[in-house]
Length: 148
Image (cartoon, rainbow, N blue to C red):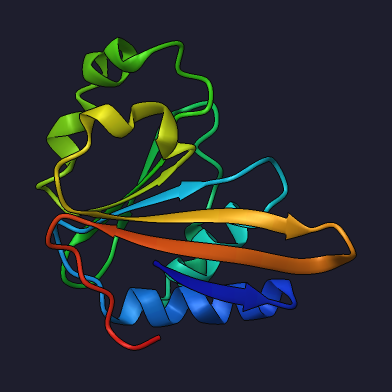
């Protein structure tokens, strides 16, 4: 397990770019944490690495948005509103895992459906400094993080 301390939204985005630079088709990145903890800022930074920052939109009501990166599609899920894992299956969510790279906000809701290898990033706030976010990175299966 690795921790990263972000002191600003910009630092969170820069950290996401480093993660993106080591990403490949088939990777799954699960983002967990309460509202306002930095998950969307991370996703913004991740997409900026692929020059897709102008296309970002919240998938809150559509569940998944697709972005065409140069080498593979990126699927951005927000599963907050799903009632149960059956809804994820109903939209064919599991079929996206091998098609491209998946970023899943609120992914803890569907963790039991995830393949064995993925990166989980848990976001939390520092209650003494409202700008600070603690990002806890945990690799599952064969997922490896290169130096970040």
